[in-house]
Amino acid sequence: MRLVQFESNNGERRVGVVDGNQLREVQTARSVRELALAAIEAGINLQQQVERLGLGASHDYAALLADLKVLPPLDHPDPAHMLISGTGLTHLGSASARDKMHQGADETALTDTMRIFKWGLEGGKPAAGQAGVQPEWFYKGDGRIVVRPGAAFPVPPFAEDAGEEPEIGGLYVIGPDSKPYRLGFAVGNEFSDHVMERKNYLYLAHSKLRSCSFGPELRMGELPQHLAGTSRILRHGEEIWRNEFLSGEANMCHSLENLEYHHFKYSQFLTPGDVHVHFFGTATLSFADGIRTLPGDVFEISQAEFGAPLINGVGSSDAAFEPGQVTPL
Image (tube, rainbow, N blue to C red; front, top):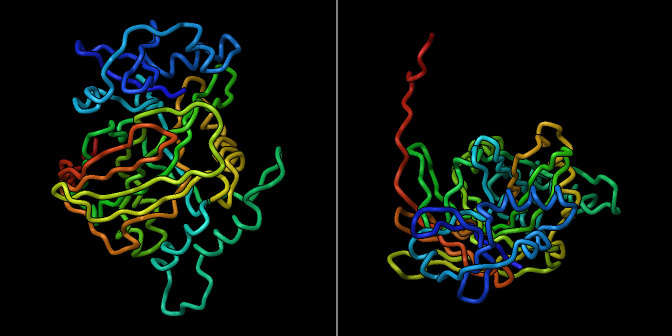
């Protein structure tokens, strides 16, 4: 089962189940977060909660997407209680492009990038219930940075690149018991600044403080072991780049359980009612193939198991925050 959050013609929020070319409303549901919290309280899973409420009216899915009425498949009424984060160097092959960015003059030396990747290969998939080596981790922002499917990414005036990162993200709600509950997964574009990162790997934290998008669909259940999708870029309607991207644990050097443990082991991430979107990483970047995006370019990320593709454009710059604008009190 796959869920979508959307706005009706009168602007009211709805939750829908994907049914071919239609979305069937989940009766009385206004958000996936509320559905999840109700399921936790009832001691059932998310799909059972949907079935418990039943399905109602049908809506034209393609029309909702075209009209930008589809929302991210998980959010929070207070964006400050939605944390967007991720892990890097988690996929087989993911270290190659990164290592090229971070190598110095001595290309025979083992970079910090390759050290972390090697640790993941050796200890990223421990036995069930055990902690393995921790991955690279980064913070992206709160719910205000999330761009809905179909909309354009704002680009800060100080940005040096506007690059896509096709990934799978885990979607979570923290229950009243302060435990994380995984609702499912979504395709995501973990939009980043690779030129800034290439200057020095210690700029990774800066390069990740950008917008992102995920969805349009939340896929319930376990993540398939092998996923093969397509990432492509369109310019003036013409494809300028395309590549396959792989995910699922068969293509990763870390298990999902290990990535989740090393995120949620921090008590500050276990506030009841909060929601989390955690990106699991990628091995495929157009930047590694020499592509530099321009305003108006369009990203399209698709994986058949996740339904409709995630489409976002490259927008114009945000309003600039200038030096000296901090006011002392």
